[in-house]
Image 1 (cartoon, rainbow, N blue to C red):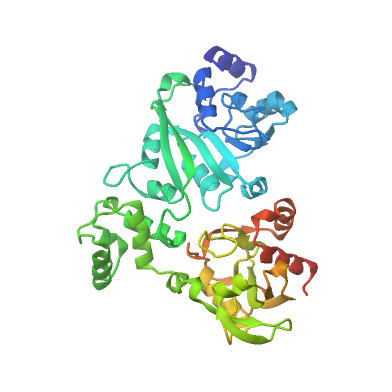
Image 2 (spheres, helix red, strand yellow; image 1 turned 90 degrees about the horizontal axis):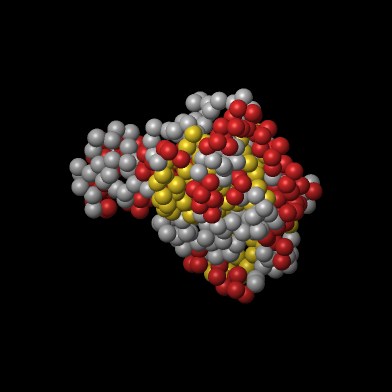
Amino acid sequence: MNLPELQELLKRYALAPSRKLGQSFLVDTAMSQWIASQLQIGPDDCVVEVGSGFGALTEHLVGKCRRLVLVEADGRLAKFLQEKYGSVGVEVVHADATEYDVRPLFLEGGVKFIGNLPYSVGNTILERFLDAPSPVTQAIIMVQKEVGDRFVAEPRSKNYGILTLMLQERWSITPLRTIGPDLFHPRPAVDSTIVRFDRRPPGELAPHSPEVYREVVKRGFSQRRKQLHNNLRLEAAKADEIFGAMGLKPSARAEELSLAEWVDLSNLIDPHPCSLLPPAATESLDVVDGNDEVIGTLPRREIHAGKHLHRAVHVFVRNKLGEIFLQFRSHLKDTHGLKWDSSASGHVDPGESYADCAEREMWEEIWVRPKGELVRIARLPASEATDLEFSEVFLGEAQGRIRIHGQEIDSGRWFSPEFIDEWIGTRPQDFATGFITCFRAWRRGGE
């Protein structure tokens, strides 16, 4: 789309670009095509475009992917997009992208994201679509250059701060190109930057609690000019211990720490319960017979390798909306790594009851105690469908806010039981085997 074409459309639809919505339309066809090409779309991909406007990028996406979803906040533009692209199977959603529910996108098995984001709400849109666990696998985003500079900033620079560390925790961010205001109408007062987001590989950072990490980063940058220990509000002895362990000077400031050092700092300030657990391979568990009677004890690794029957629990934590918290398992797990699973789950220790194990797993994995008693909702015999585990399934609420740790859980999110039913039916490969069996038993009404 060039400038004369845009001006004709603005006239036809009696539409003036909205300052409130940050509307500034790209009017260089070659640049639009180049930006769209950076997403490297395949025929099986699902692509979500935010802020489609008059379709400058859209026209280079149509027909190249399996599913294309356009999210547009301006009703007049959404109507235009529907009229132009609805007949060729493009889905147009008239919605504020800052409030868009990304959870249905998990049915796609990964989506690619593209958009020209307005300055006023761009960071909120990124949080909505890219916060872990995210259905997005790659993103191409255009933002004002000063914002893009903060995305990719390095320690000890003026642009390095909270936004940098929030995004870089999960994403490797690459600046691709900077373009001037003359390619837009109306002309913005600043340059724009195009950046690519790729998921950071599992294991690139030390296991940590993302909730604690974010809290510590925000505290650390609360007053940028102050020394870090003052912002963290640590007792002197604790600060000396932590700074000494990390090799930091007492005068260190927040912008001096690297991403990896912020992760280490968060682990030292507030260790998650599961970060203190011994390696899973050294854990010993009861071996049971077909009647769930104990016949011996073996290391966990031998139990799995020898396919011995053993015991486990699954806990479904429910919120006031009736949604269930699902964990996305850590890549460090010895079975079903990077699969979705129950809110908390784990093996029953020797001599431990199923009920006691359920409470312990809640504390170790999601750092909460149950609110009231957990209710046993199903008991399942050991089989291939339960990973050879006699399993008891519990339902309850959390007392306090769930916090996780990368040693056990990569991330987590709340989903309705009805959506989980649909998700399992559509993509059973996304889930741990035992979870599917336990969840279906609960949905059928128990044992």
